[in-house]
Image (tube, rainbow, N blue to C red; front, side):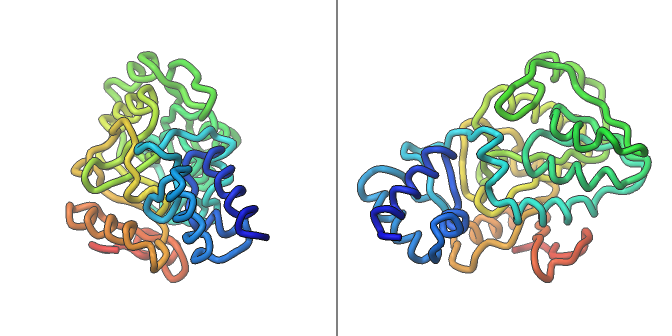
Length: 274
């Protein structure tokens, strides 16, 4: 593929998704991340996109939110590994809340095997993943359906969470920084996520490395409220993601890294730093 064709395809992917990792771009255009990084620099010089922490985003600062069909095809291997590791933190008989997102949907598929579990969620996709789990009770919030991510939002969702107390909340989002914590691009989604957090004794954030260092418009969980981050191993050359991981660890966030050698349970890959 010629450079011009490759760069046009990269530009189309970023326009369609809002934000795409270098790893994903390299996979789609069938070239190395080094070549893709060079293409991204050239497109940035033309003002067509911005480089961001191991990926590329639409120009103009904050990234916009992608719809579910686009998100479901991004970083799929990473999301699977993260979900495998995160499921190991859930014990038989627990009550947890699980927020909306493609990574939390992957987690829900694994939670279907945990007996005696109660899952509170505002996500139709999470509920669907657990619908046929005989030993798992699913409690859905009320609210208004937001079609782009199949989540219930609004005052109905928030009010239904009042007075609730569970052991853990599992949340995803659009971006995660040590400075602002977890954030998302939609105000209604952010508000419900904050209500989910208030119901939980611990907060576990599920975020692949492409979200590390990315800042979006609405803060959902401040860094000092995040108990644990479950993520994948950033590429060795992704200095920004690695720096962000260290900054999060320095602020007391427990880091659990999924991937080769990380193990399949809570102990695997966890430590005070990346």
